[in-house]
Length: 169
Ligand SMILES: [Cu+2]
Image 1 (spheres, rainbow, N blue to C red):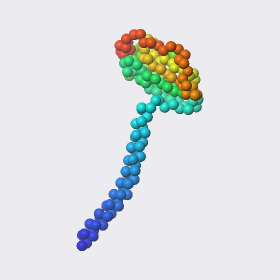
Image 2: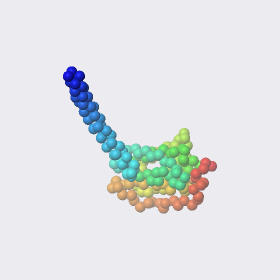
Image 3: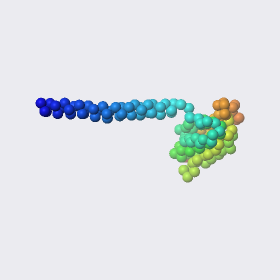
Image 4: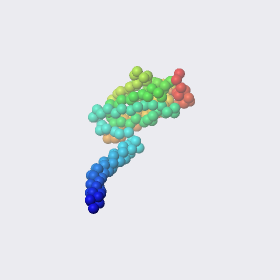
């Protein structure tokens, strides 16, 4: 009798503990899953765009996949401070020099100095390319209405072979 009572009490106590422990845990797991779902959805979205002209800094890592820049497009709103960190593992050879037409940017990317910073104060589409016109990148700056004005310059057409840019020179 005593053993049975004790066993019954143990079962009840264990059950209560299990309910107390598992309930918050399962709720927490649910929240974690939701957070992960929200996080995993963002890479499929376009690059996040802050409110225009608020001076927010957006940071991008610019690399080269052997054919074009990654990301191929950098899209921001007018007034955003843009910080581009060049990937020195892939921006090699002629790709070490990153030019952004219309912003007067021509930057030699090296491990000791791989940052390009500017304020995207002019709306439009601006080609990003190496000194040989390769990389096929774009800086796209939306104006305050979310519109991108007609490109101020014709896109640069790559004329060489990709091989030249994939090896250090
Ligand atoms: Cu190149």
